[in-house]
Amino acid sequence: MHKKNNIIPAIDRGIKVLDFLIRNSGKAKYSEIKKIFSEITDASFNRLLLALIDSNCIKKNEFGYEISDLIKSWQSQLSGSRT
Image (cartoon, rainbow, N blue to C red; front, side):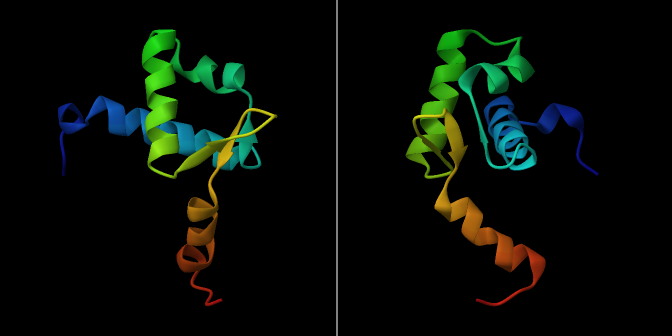
């Protein structure tokens, strides 16, 4: 069992963004996502989003942010389907 203090904050936040987007039909506005990160500055939050974009985990569009095609492609693997 891992202790809570072994969590790397940036990774934990990145997973929270992905989880939020997935549970929100795959997309959300900046302000909607930011609400779950009231404890961090806007600059830190922007860096987090940019890191997720650079890692091809999310993408920015005219609506706001959405999960990337890479993350969407994991669905069949996680559900056990083969495409």
